[in-house]
Structures are given as structure tokens and as C-alpha cells.
Image 1 (cartoon, protein in one colour):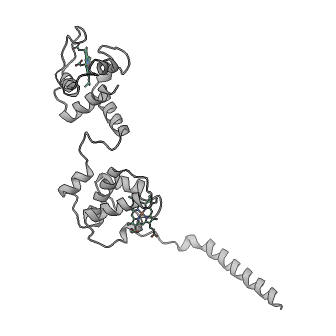
Image 2: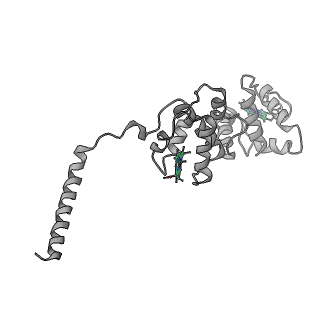
Image 3: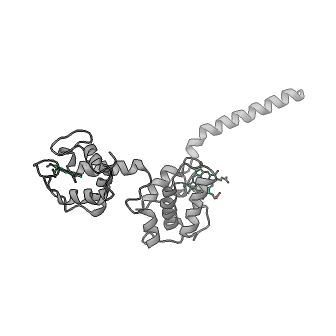
Length: 215
Ligand code: HEC
Ligand code: HEC
């Protein structure tokens, strides 16, 4: 046998063996270890991490980190993914994911005040204008505001665009409109009264007022 021929035979043999292994592979697969997925818990960072942290590498990268890392360390780790490796996440995502990781893989507890604060950022400081818009629209919808109001034309009550125009030069606009929604009333736009919404939280009232004033 020439050298060449022997090589070819050998290669073929290897290939056959390889193909056989591939075919047999499904039978011998063991389930992935549980470490390959993110550990579940009730913090909002769990869903975010699943969404944002598994596009480039598996969750193993997280479970292989040394145990006992603090909130600051995990937040720095998420920040490094954002700044150094270009993970497409906002600064707020970094804090929320950092809090989830610290409580799940590190030394923090989900009930820690700083973990809670990072996981549920104060309303009124939304991560993006888009988020604020969606929230305010949902509030308007859920409280039946849109059965009497539209953004750009009068229904029972004035168009929100006209309300924004009326208050455009008023430094107290946010306070006044928040109060208008809370207390309802009549006589500012006509004789039809608007019902009060005294049961809504100050945050919700303000979010709606701010949104209306941006129209
Ligand atoms: C844009 C891609 C990308 C995304 C998205 C990403 N990572 Fe990474 N990550 C990397 C790269 C690159 C490395 C370094 C890989 C290596 O060294 O083999 C890495 C490594 C890591 C490590 C190992 C320790 C280290 O610092 O190298 C951890 C932990 C980690 N990532 C966590 C996360 C978390 C948490 C998220 C979600 C916030 C995330 N990654 C999202 C690219 C990404
Ligand atoms: C039953 C119909 C009705 C509903 C429901 C309603 N409004 Fe009104 N709204 C009115 C009317 C009528 C006026 C005009 C009142 C007036 O002339 O003073 C008004 C006025 C307003 C104004 C202008 C206040 C000002 O200071 O000029 C705002 C802002 C407003 N509504 C927001 C809301 C929001 C937010 C909701 C839901 C939480 C809501 N409205 C629900 C009928 C309604």
C-alpha cells in the first residue's frame, strides 16, 4: 500500500467512525446541568437576565463566578458586559440585573433594601421615554380617561393637546394638572364636570399629568 492510499483509508475510517458517533450521539446525551439556565426567583432582573445575558454566552459564565460576590461586584460585572463587551443594556438594566445576580448567586438577599431599591427603581425616573409613555398610556386606559378624552380632539373632556397648550407657559403646570385629575371639577373647559380620581396614587397622577403636558 502506498503511503497515500494508507492515509486515505485511515481518513475514511475516521470519518465513518465520526458519522457513527454523530448518529449515536442523541442516545448518549445527558440533560444539560441546571447551571446552564438562570436560576429563577421573583426579582425583575431574572427575566431581564434571561433576555439580555444569554445572547453571547451561556448562563454557565455566571454560575462559574466565585460565590459570595456582593451587590456592588455583581453590578460591576453586568456593567463590564455593557461597557467593555458592548452588551445592549441600559444603565438601569445593569442595576436591575446586578441586584438579581447578587441575590441569586452572591451574598445578597432578595429582601435587602439595596437589592429592592435597585430592582424597583423609583417611578418618575423611568429608564427611557418609551417606558414612561407606555406606562402613562396604560394608566389613562385603565382608568377610563380615554372614554372622555383623546390626545388630539375634544371628546367629553378637552383634548390633551389643548390641555398641554393651555399650561405651556405655566411653571406650576405639573402640580396644577395633577390636582385637576385628582379632584376633577368643572368650569375650566365648559360646564361638563370631570369626576375626581382621588383613589389614585400620587405617582400615577403625576405620571399621567406629565404625559398629558407633553402632548
Ligand atoms: C455582547 C456580548 C455579551 C453579552 C450580551 C453579555 N456578555 Fe458576559 N461576556 C462577554 C464576553 C466577550 C466575555 C468574556 C469571554 C471570555 O473571556 O471568554 C464575557 C464574560 C462574562 C463573565 C465571566 C467573567 C468575566 O468578567 O469575564 C460573566 C460573569 C458574564 N459575562 C456575565 C454576563 C452578564 C450578567 C450579562 C448580562 C448583563 C452578560 N454577561 C452579557 C460578552 C457578553
Ligand atoms: C366622565 C368623563 C371624564 C373622565 C372619565 C375623565 N375626564 Fe378629564 N375631563 C373631563 C371634563 C368634562 C373636563 C373639563 C372640566 C372643566 O371644564 O373644568 C376634563 C378635564 C381634564 C383635564 C384638564 C384639567 C385642567 O386643569 O384644565 C385633564 C388634565 C384631565 N381631564 C385628565 C383626565 C384624566 C387623567 C382622566 C383619567 C384618570 C380623566 N381626565 C378622566 C371629563 C372626563
